[in-house]
Image (tube, helix red, strand yellow):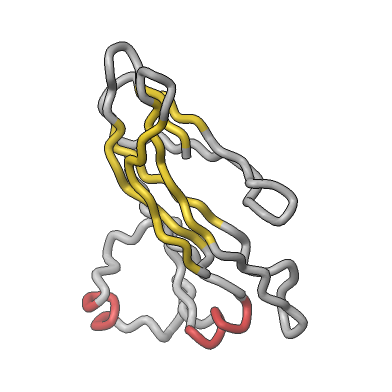
Length: 147
């Protein structure tokens, strides 16, 4: 098809301009009109080869309950990126209905006396996701954080 590896649309000049001489096998190209017709959304993730990725599913707060928190234990000073993500709709296509709710997030650090202090927070907003990038500090052997 258009823009496949064997497509006649690729000229030598265009390949040079886009620096495609050593292209990754996972890369593909398509026209915007085809993308728009075939996909409902685009999600771009930052991949960091020296970072560990962990995912935790949970409940968002609602009229039924306050939602679910996740506990993080820091055994060393650690840079973390915390993302809260929600699916934008239940169905796709012409009949799709947006189901986004306000999202906000706070990271709290447990103190030695059992109380919590706010380390970082993201304001509530009506978006598909919110994120925070922060450094977790270790106190003594470990430190506990609540997201």
